[in-house]
Amino acid sequence: MMTNQFVNGFLAGVAVSATGFYVYNRNREKIDSFLRSQGINVPAASSRDYASMSMKELVSTKEHIEDLIAEMESARNNQEQLSAKG
Image (cartoon, rainbow, N blue to C red; front, side, top):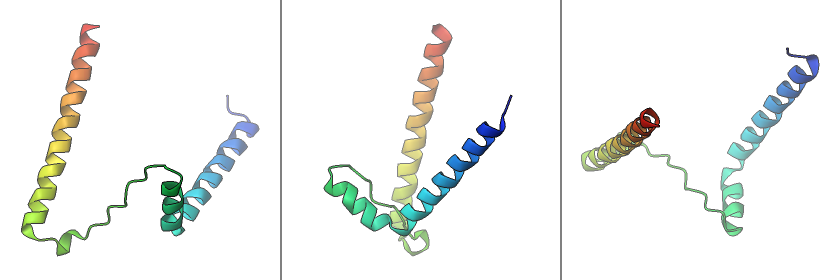
């Protein structure tokens, strides 16, 4: 049963999360550089403009994505097989 306290807490959590996401996106470079200076590995944002990429770059990116998909499908199939046996 959901009480008013639960609903209020949930809404407050959503509001804080949305505010944090907004602040992070506005200051992404500063925050990422600070985290890197503290030894935290923050991957660089991948904001590629696919329309300006060469055909070779597009094909390479496509192949990389297909490889990632195949790895994830294989891992999922292995997990399903282990679940079925156990």
